[in-house]
Image 1 (cartoon, rainbow, N blue to C red):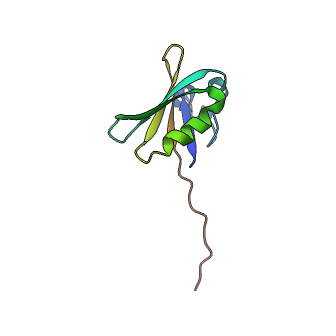
Image 2: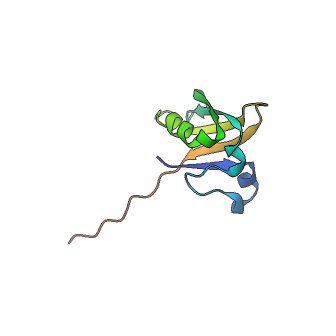
Amino acid sequence: MHFRVRDLSAERCVWSVPPIDTVPVKLRCRMLAVRAFNANHAMVGEELTEGGKLASAVALLFADPHAAYLHVHFATDNRYAARVERFPLPEPLRPHQP
């Protein structure tokens, strides 16, 4: 399972979109509240985690097949920090067999 974090700077500028499976630096040193939402925008799970362990929390919440996307908030003041989306990688090309 791969993911992409779109923080506020990524929403404003295409050049700030972090690479796949990477947690932005500004999220790594804060306590975070991560909430999972389904396709109908209903909350289906939540985790409280240190920023350095965000990737583990993402994997845990995305293990639920109903989780469509995640919202990350700073735990101390509940300010919105980022949206995390599943990022499917294309399947590798297979050689054509005649």
